[in-house]
Image (cartoon, rainbow, N blue to C red; front, top):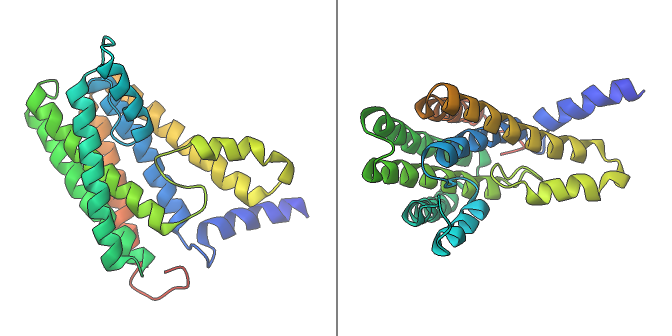
Length: 237
């Protein structure tokens, strides 16, 4: 019986009527968080562009004069993220009643911003202050958009950029033995970890542009799928 239930849990989680394909698409975006933060932390001066909790802490380190932390880089990323979240709020006001359309449009904008960042990294010196700040601002805006969109989509335990409460829930609710809840929380952690590992490997052994390009490609895939599944009415919209 348990063997029959497990595939059913996974199938319902990824294509159930309540959220449709949203969990799978948001998990792909969670991978991009690991990728982009690998680029920003390892190649752009110890700054987060997706995980703003870490970025606020890094800003504090920079303000205290800790070596190796760049204050203006952290502030640029933070400002970009907040602008992106604001634009995400505008998008929610316009398309918030249709979750498929919201995800399609948010990830389309995100793709444009990451593409700009990628072009800047390809044609300029990513370690110079000006191109670095453009990359950080664009990436910050992209993930502010993503975070605002994911918040409105409201798929439980998949915020795409933050894992603190997810990790807490994994351990705190173990005794409840809710397979569906444990699955989505565990997958969120695994996806971000996988993105960070792949991103770090690409940055260290190849180039930051490859990691950023992969993140951009994954966002494009999510946008295309969201557009395809939003055409026909569905309960999860």
